[in-house]
Image (tube, rainbow, N blue to C red; front, top):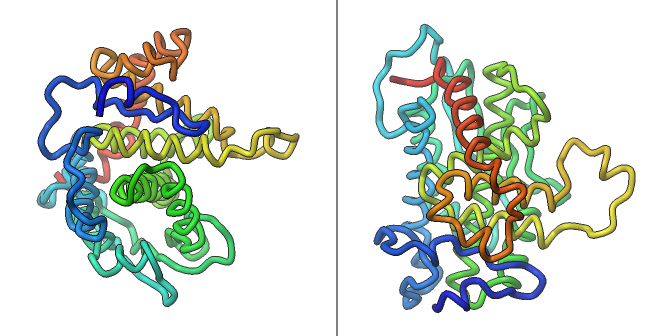
Length: 301
């Protein structure tokens, strides 16, 4: 795929492919010029490894998630992350269940985090397109209905089945880590400043960037822009979530801020305004340090 193809607009959504400007991408990193011969169903194991790699990136945030030992700050480890699947999984959800991606993620989380109690990760039918941490149940609920929407939007934006799979898994990974941020904020009683929704968006974005899953972050940003309702009313301004367009630009800012030279295409291609971009390296460092400080007491070192 050429540089022009990488930077063109697809439908109304800019295809943000930061790796297109990277001279020598890693062989393990999905790029816009990568091979497309495999069937989408054969990608699940490799994508599982990518998702677990994101947990290994917690080591960048002061957490040893790649097979650490005990140690730590005196916090007791009295719980586990547990992946659960309620009946009704179809399509992508069934593939994720079959390949045990979230079981792998739970194992990686257990290697890296202490918990004061169990934290189930439950894929289930919710009756609405949603995903959320329920403090009453003490569980992360990943709704089949939202995954169906993610799959549908990914198929609309993708050029082929393989890209659709990458988009859907990347977006679902972002949503999972977002909800994980809510769960950790509650269980650890983290003293977050500002809006919690923005903070856990940052958590998910930082984690995936540190795992070199930048293209997957870009896919998630595309999803928020594609699902933006357009005209807004008072209820949307009052909502605890930032507007979808704001979430989109906040994610791009962190991508750019992580390495302005590598991701200059976001500015030169007109996706991120220069007036915001100048602040992004400082935002990235500040937010990375904040999450490192918050998570370190609960790490298994």
